[in-house]
Length: 342
Image (cartoon, rainbow, N blue to C red):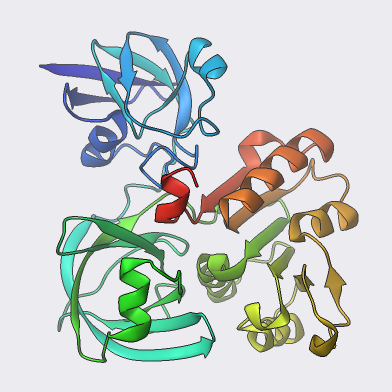
């Protein structure tokens, strides 16, 4: 069966098959529902069911507690309809601007920038370009049918290659391959662009960029895009790592702070050792934001990194610093361990 889905308050409509998730149908129809992980872990696609019935597939309790589901909230990435639906969701108007496509890519360069971070440069087929919004991600299509998601770390205008920042997760099938057996000129397949994590350019609010670890990748693309477009909104980057070496492009961020007007950079380290000789900020990176900006009511926040950081920032910023919930944009890097609930 096919069901009609109506999105409020926009009034946009699309059709959804009974064995298809609401989000998959929306993406297919070019309707910009917000989303991140697509597998019930991050909560970005959360909205409300105003009428109709649906059933959720597997998802994490933190993304949709049972009490919220009973109040009519839903995760559209893992919800399948049983009737026509009217849903309430914050539609992202630019989300469907560029077509999602599958294509092969060749590994053009591999640059190991720290003990556990590899920067991959991907070369697309001749005469092919991938149009995308700075901040979006691609999914590698692995031979076993699984997928691995990585944010593009360069703005679309920068060069013909796509760059990715990949952290080694020991025991992770794909990252073990990247760090141990992958070679330049290897061929992979991917699908993209995906996700709704990108700069909302219809606002003039100052911006807080919040990253942990390789969550810096899409933030880097957003900064490059803003600089290229001469976007003059004040922008402060808070980048956190356990040790100073986790801030693997610290020098680039310092250069931005010197050369880009309206840009500030605040590095934060949580577990510095004496031999690190770290003299900068310490502690949790989202708490550094709260110390500097106790009133976020007039800001937009773009957060990317470990789910625990993103979740804490969302909760604390909205509850303690008056950040409007609709001005918190996030992309949580969910690993296979995160998805398993570990």
